[in-house]
Image 1 (cartoon, rainbow, N blue to C red):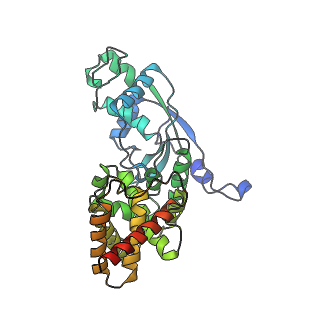
Image 2: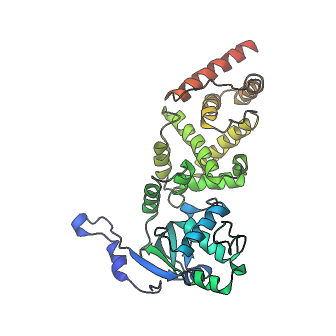
Image 3: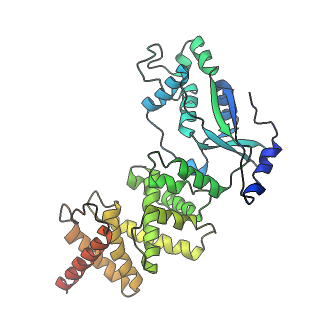
Length: 352
């Protein structure tokens, strides 16, 4: 049984680079096989970190899903190898930081901590019971189950963690917000967005879906940037990822103030829209383009925004569907931007 206190200097040195491959950093990985009782002990003592920034605030799976993980453990079915790097804390302690497989690990640990009742019909003797309600023999059997995971004694750099996390998610159902959140360690923009969303309860607008809130605020900020640079407002999401990835230096107070002012104004405007689709990008971005045309004009902005608010009330909120269906049109956002601008100008003419 491997132990985290073992010293493996060769692994740390391996991350310095292999001369055979132009000194590109190389990492050595090993497999640990430990009893679940020992993993739980280490977890309670802070040896495992299942909540690093790139995986922070992930929504828990259903009790049924977690129970299925427990079922796989007691039946000895393979669950893949969760992956960890090793972080050296300021106190000198070494912590296994989760890179992939967090939910599989925490499901069984949550059960062993009595966080939920086993919900599957089989084994019938476990159904509806927490771990502490099992027979002593059943508890011992789970405690003694061997759990395998893969680790490196090296701490991976933030950009490598982000890159690798995204690659690992390619074949999984991963949201754009989760992809963005993988940059939480390295991108100052992602850090700013999380701070802004938390301070302004933006997550509540998305039924407490933190990643959706992250994605939406990021789209708004990127659209602000794209508008000033004459770029496409609704590019492939990889473009937004690269934009966020490039923000490695702390944002200036001027930039933070600009982002905050525009975000405050636009989220306030969206709150006046009655449509349930108001936070979807297909509805939001054309309206944001119109908002930016007004605010970036720097002339009589307050009065123009009042008129825009009237336009929303009289023209947008009075119809069930403001925009026509786009049917996968790649120029949908561009066309809708043109449409809403024309309709807004007609509204201004009719209200002179």
